[in-house]
Length: 306
Image 1 (tube, rainbow, N blue to C red):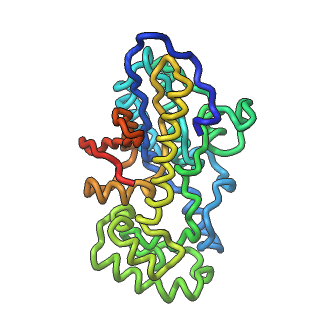
Image 2: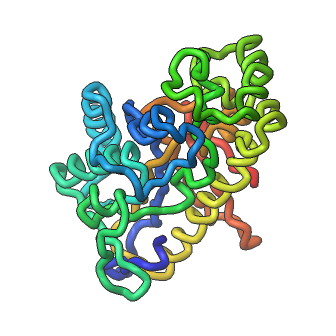
Image 3: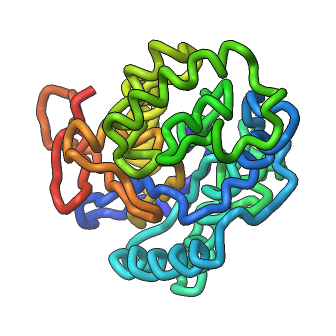
């Protein structure tokens, strides 16, 4: 978190008003190797463990191209003369790899990159995929990752196709409970199939969670992960204000669609695409001490209601 990181360049008199922002970006097009590895194993209902990722690349060739194109596009809206960047990410490879592509483009454009530090004020050791892939310049943030997933197979109920019937390689590894409830849950999806995992999750997760209690609904994830992100945004702005660096601080976070779906669906009526970015800004103009967080997505700016 920003609390643990030193921000260089103290303020000077008569400088312009601060323009700090937090950007949350969904990872690029991925192969989902960790997911598929679990589902294709003889323990298809296991929980995904980021510590067991055996790979450092999960983006498809198209995903790598898209990430670079979007990085070039996004970073062209910022200014290396006035903005310094701080990178944070989920520790799943597809998010960290996307962050690294943005980091590489940022370096090419001459941006100052803030190096994360650990709790002891020392440079972080490479303890997870975010830090490993980012060569120490990308900090893992729990609120951006997917550590709430308990059963990988059940999460696939939202796929447009019937995963259990068409894809599962070891049907004997599927519990009797999952097999019994699967057809009931699939009827909900097939009655109103949105054509994508995200679309089905946003539309049907509350109903599915009643059938599979260890599948978190979009609203439940919003109330944990998304709200944790908003606390990070507020705390980050407070720390930036205390340290008063000369440059504006732009925090670039890389995460997953799960965390944003309820917020976007409720406020914009849409899901989030690969490499799509939501911008968050703390509005400190109020006089009552209750700073607002403004979110900009889909060409529209709203106040985040928590």
